[in-house]
Length: 283
Image (cartoon, rainbow, N blue to C red; front, side, top):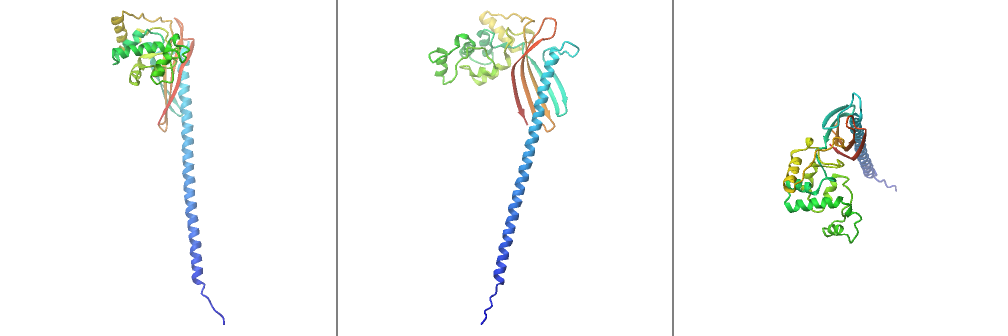
């Protein structure tokens, strides 16, 4: 006797499972496609940002070197070294170059600690702090501090204060190194930096000095009997150049350069030295 079985239900169930598998596969493929598309867009944006950033860097650096070239030129394109603002139009955007004349500032490697003491006092430090920090600056750049070993007094002072460094016994190479000097606070360092410079090798040029620098000189004269003679015009010229390049997508790149020019009495500078080469980007 033959027995007939109804296989319709089983076939329906198998068809349903197959449909679910296909649907899940489609969902997974869709998600994978979305992820790949998103990753591609991200990579494209990163590549574009990298390209624009490189172009802005090149534009800013080019503007800095063009500014230096004009300062060295003896012909009709000569720009007298000093404070100025210039704008350069580039295919990738614009570059604004601002030159700050450092000749009216106080050379941290040159002046007596008494002048620094007067400056720190004017910037809000009490007398004891101003004296100690000014002396610590002098100790930092003094050759007597060179070769600090474990038994040297300067090294011991810094170790006692929890520092892992000690005075270098050399001139300051960067203004930011003043933050390493024993006893100075970040607030006092930040307040002093706008009035300090490097490699001027003499006192400030009084005709370029700010009211704060002039006040510090006057205070040093009252308190310590010191005076600053006007600078030798044959001396070096120190400038701070900031080139700010802005792209079409509002991305910006800034190149900051501290420059020393050595010139002659009657002509343009004939030699230059870059003292600092820094950068920064913003969006």
